[in-house]
Length: 351
Image 1: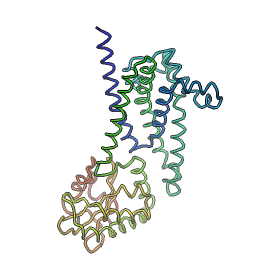
Image 2: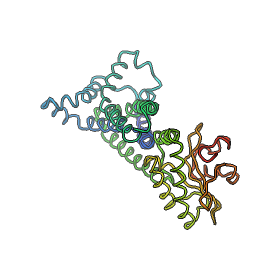
Image 3: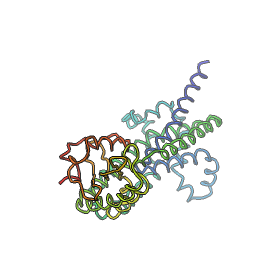
Image 4: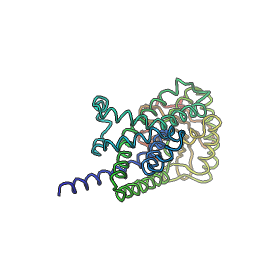
């Protein structure tokens, strides 16, 4: 009478976690390179669900034994020492430094860190490749290090917050013969992944990653004249199509004008950086002013440029209609108003 309600409550808690965790991972993947976490989760599912077969292969092949040694040792660890209650792993990051002080918790942590080594190698390789492909040579390693630090921090938190509860749940249900509950959890997780991808696909704007935002800001500051020239060309390239197609109700411009602007921006910015810019025009019926802009994070100045119908540049924000920046903020659904800085401080549109 006591154990059944507790078991049901434990299952419902795990069910809630499996419904939320994949959604968090998908959204995080839009902001940071978290492929290392995905590799760890994939390895966890394969090792725990096909443990017997992998153990047989490891006994016959030294290479497979070496390749999967840490993973199989992780599974054997929990076979001897059953996982703790689910709440312990759910709040695992908050229990630091307990799991470095207590003997069994410390052994579990070091076993876990060895298990996630493959994901860490993948992450480092991705970060190195990202630097040479997206940052170098215009931006040096020093400019890249804060992004590396933020990515490593997010990856570590995701591993502690998501992989520990997930992997211990799979190994516990698998080893205790509760296969039906395990399959229910996996189906819920797959449904959550589908819902997360649906949410991302239905967004009016793509999610701009942390790295992309940093690169737009740093690249613009590195070569402001080239940035201004690219922005001006982008705005002028978009104007003709804008006048032909008109403007949406909130002033936001999409379709051909935006594609023309982003194509011109690629002469200076990387492709994903160009995708971070948006277009806004006013008035709606016969637009006379067009703004090409990048909405900055809180505490950072936006990057923008504006032109008139004759394609001449507007150099002062005072020449824009009152409330223009708030309207742009609403059009992109952003959380940081473009007018958060005083008008005399705003980016590239001023003298």
